[in-house]
Length: 213
Length: 213
Image 1: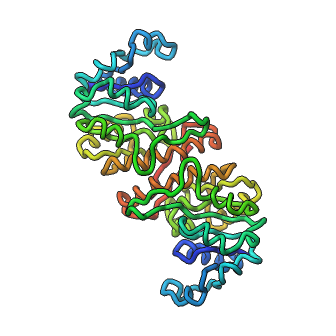
Image 2: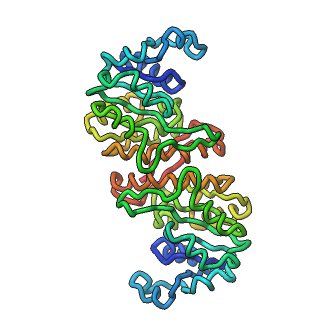
Image 3: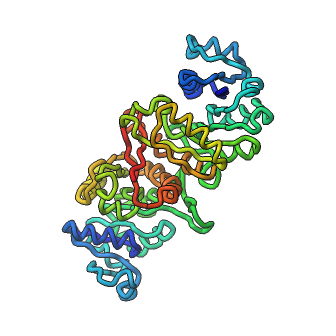
């Protein structure tokens, strides 16, 4: 599948490489491909970089892996015409570090970043997933609990949810809880305030929850 | 240990009975003991009922098991003098059902109900715990995953935390994550928005998270 990953941070880069290894045709969108390619963390990375306004043109699926605070602007540069009709996998979190650590959420409870994105790009099919884990676990769930931990996929669109669930399976996820309705992203994003507070006591970001039932 | 449980709902009643079975001297506080004792859900319950203003007088530990919206008022009736110097185990959640289901949180992110209680009763030693599970699991963790799921205990007071952790062990909890600082209750309370959204898809409230690391 042709996949455009928006965001050149560690999450976007690592996920793009993992999706490429899984056999997909992946490109990463950035404002200035020349500049990004010179960045230390991009040396040796063999994923094509393209301008935001170009990268999603022929993609079937777009991943929002930008910082939560920059997501709407970055996706605006990608362009609503390039997002229309496509699955938009949103892995971001609306974390606000302006008051230090732990971060607060810039949107919560009665709304979510995923829903803000859906409202801004009504013709995209937004699916919230993978925002609940650190990227090393996201692309390699076997890192914790022999892979027996839980991820979620929330969307208003059942078909788009299925596309994302298939991608999650390719990455190695087995326990995937499907949530019908993008408003469930409120719950998924509000997991972060506990997640960030567990990192210290656990001494690692490589942990995850298992929903035991 | 002499324990006063504040709140006569299913959480308070069930927890009081479990603590009594564990060998503690438990009484439940209510506005009108006569009326509560006549309630259908209290028939056959062998835990003494006492007035709020009386119940905590000689207690060593007080449990807040009231509805989140009523907690500050109920604890006010218990009286700050009867809470001073005592461990105050807060199992409540600031759930607001006024807009229907799923509920929102009346306090979140930059504050928590546990911290509000601590500020209102500065001489109590507030510990947040057990708010993350349904009461049947709280008192019998073996109900899910053979007991191998996670609970948390957050407090500013390490000694008070230890008292609660010992109680949790008596109830059967093994995987207890200790969080230093009552502000961690923000994370514990913000787990609820995901919890309430999982109940439907899972078809039960008898589930819990295991923090796998």
